[in-house]
Length: 240
Image (cartoon, rainbow, N blue to C red; front, side, top):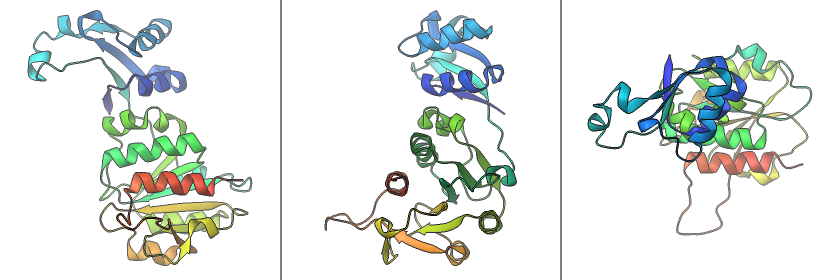
C-alpha cells in the first residue's frame, strides 16, 4: 500500500533507509517550505519525481479546504517475521509489544520514543488495533523506519515465542503493586503496553513474568496517556 506522508522528517527517514520506496514528492506551486527543501534535494539525488501538485491537480486545494500542502507517496514498510525480531536476544536490550492500541497518534508517538531509546523491536497485533497508517508514520517522525516490527494475529503466542527466545515479559498496569523503578535491569525485557481504555487483556496479563506501574507523585492526576506512559517506561528500563 502507498501512503501519503506529510511530515518531511518521515519522508527523509524513508529516503535514508529505502529510497526506492519513495515514489513521488508533491509540492504545491513547486514550493518546498521548511524541511521539504531537504526532501526535494533527496528526490533529485535519487531520481524521484517532484510534481507541482497545483498544476497536476488544480482542484486539490479546494477539496482539502485550502489546506493542501506538500506530501510524498511512500510505500508502507513491510513487517518482519517474529523469529527475526527475536533473533538476537543474548546481547540484552528492550523489546516492546502493543496490546490492541487503537489511536494512531499513540502508536506513532510510541514508535518515536522507541527509536529515540533504541528499542530492539516492536510486536503489534493485526486485530482490534490501529494499522500503520500515514498518521502513524508522520507522528513517529522517522521512528517507523528505525525500529523493526512484526504484526501478529495472536499476541499471547508472540509473547510465548519471546520467552522461548530468552526474553522476560513485563506488563504495565496502573493497578500493579511493583514500581518500574524496582524492575531489575540485568535481563532482556519485552515490555507490553495495553489498550487506551482497558489496558492489558486478561490473557496477556497471565503471560507476563512481572507487572509494573509508574507510581504517581501527585494527587490530582493518577493516570497517564499510554504513549506518555510508554515513553517513561522505556526511558526507565533503558537506564544502565
